[in-house]
Amino acid sequence: MNIDSFFIAAHVRVKDMATLIKDKSNVESDSENTNASDEEETGDSNSAVGGEDEEVDEISQSSENEKSDVSEDEEPCKEDENASLICKAMHSYNPGKKGYLMFEKGDEMKVIEKLDQNWIKVENRKQEVGLVPLNYVTFLREKHKTLENNISDASTKSGKDLWQNLKLAVKQSATTDVLNALGAMPSGFRISTLHKLLNENCMYTLECALAPKLSSSNLGYCHFSMDSSNETLQVTVAKVQRTIRLVACKSIPLAGAGVDVLSRHVYACLFDGSKIISNIHRVSAKWDSESPKLWSFATKSMFPTPCNEDANILIRSRNAHINLGVLFEVCISLYRTSSGEHKEMSCGWVFVKLFDAFGLQISSGTYNLKLQGGSPLEHGIAVDSSIGGTDSTNPLKAMVTRFRQPTLAVKISRPETRVKNEASVLPPTFIAAVSLVQFFWIYRQILAETLLKDKTDNQNAELIYSPVLSQFPSIASQSDLVDIMRTAWMEQIKSTKRSEKSKPEYLKRLFTAIFMDNMFIYNNINMPPYSTTTNIQVQQSRNE
Image 1 (spheres, one colour):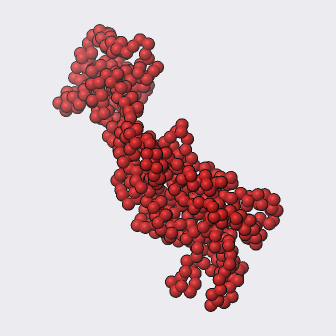
Image 2 (tube, one colour; image 1 turned 90 degrees about the horizontal axis):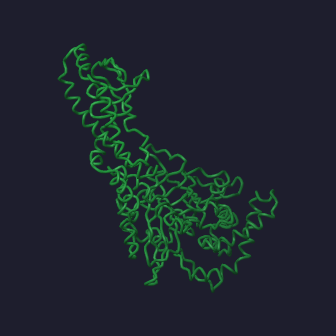
Image 3 (tube, one colour; image 1 turned 60 degrees about the vertical axis):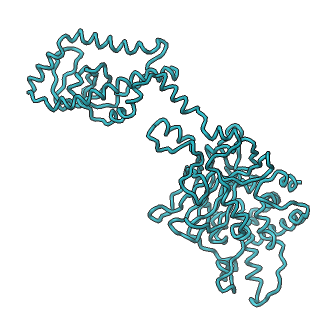
């Protein structure tokens, strides 16, 4: 049965239900004036059903006439809207004729089919089926009341009109689709807030986050000290430590004509409801022209996945405020062909709290987050104003809108044991890719030995010469350079004995050796400066 047949047949059922609901309202008013005894009611019912054979023939003929409106090649809808209705007898009924069902006052029966304005077919608890007069029963379920509100307008339309409205709701072009063809962008797009902060304020960079912070007296370090028992870097306490994996971005609007999208990515940072309290991390997304509104992310953190595509993020925070959460901003780097300008645009943002209303950390699992338009400082703005809200009173519109709503899917979980142990010496408030946690752990160990262990006199102001300590934080922020280190690291680890892999001293020596072997690449004066804004010319020059 094709879809047109479905709506035509469904329209016949809709008209029947509308008539049934209308007649039901008249039944309740008539029942209040009924004071006759059960015997008189039975007598009246017997007289009311006089000439049953002729009336049954008329009912059958009426049913056949309604079904004849549907094409002979089209099969009527098999689902009956009345099947979920339950009716209750207001009076006793004893027809004494075959094909009619006897019942007592108060009996409940399941409605199978409505035949006309006076008769319905029901089934009692004994699974006996028969006809009963409509004015002898009342309905218990509330479904018909909902149908009365939703079908009152639909009952006056033909099945063809209903089908045309459905096709229009599903296939019609959104307002932004027309604007995109003219080169305009969706109304919810803004200049990226987190990208601007990352480029204008060094305190939000990874380089600044890795550096130890001075204490209030400026005579020591905060959350950075040696453990005298084993002469290693002391563990820093983080009240919140979770891993978040970006799964997908769905229904992201297109940027428009005359624009080349160079990169699609997501910025993430810790946010306490009023300010950013961590560094800002960036994750690149994958895109396929066959599904232009769907962004996907790398499923694994292991090599050879580039570190900027690692969708697994480690978050640490020593702040356990109830408003603490992670702020995500979905962005694109674009190049406008007419003017030659590069821009970083936000396609929406979302804030997910890490604590519930009772102050407990949210459970692990996958969360589908609805994106908001504008900047994180703006509220109540839709990414695409033509989509509207999902709370529409029109069920069809709400269903279509729900699938068109831009969303970000994330999976929140607990970190693995290895990652948890290595992250224990990282800054207490920190966010980074899981694939780089081991590098950061080794760097912090080398830094602690140089600043705290090897320096016997705190009054000594001699300069420290260490290319690793001075340049690694800057290189860690440049994804292409740190991937060079990761490639060399994996080649060395493959040939390393299992017993050596667990020794911190061996890993620190290997890390230093690999870093020094690639010094000529890091300090190449002909290499253009790294920029988070994707530029094709800059990328080609750096790759060469």
